[in-house]
Length: 155
Image 1 (cartoon, one colour):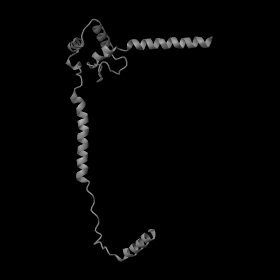
Image 2: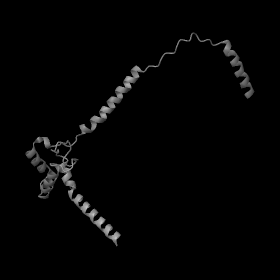
Image 3: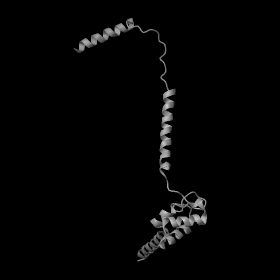
Image 4: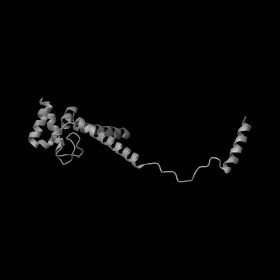
């Protein structure tokens, strides 16, 4: 019986913990608007992605956004209200194509520069001077005779 009570108590605490964290998670609508606002706690994150525990700005801002959405305000009206209260520095513009293209272009340009550098400065080393090559070298003649005999044996 004691084991059952401990298990029941554990389940109750787990449910209470999940209920508490679920109420703190903002809805998708709140996150959509909060992604366009910069957190004012000192981090460089958006209000939706602020990683500071118990942030003094993002948590109240999310609650305010939820209230404004509940009364029927549009996303732009909410953003305008925050800009009016906190200044233009709070607005985070959506990423443009420029922000997506620049990193890949930079990597491509860097690879081209490396390739050109290697092509220019990595030249094959010249062969060392060994003198004139004699085709009828007497030392090679004995090996040539041995090769001819071996080939004749193969047939």
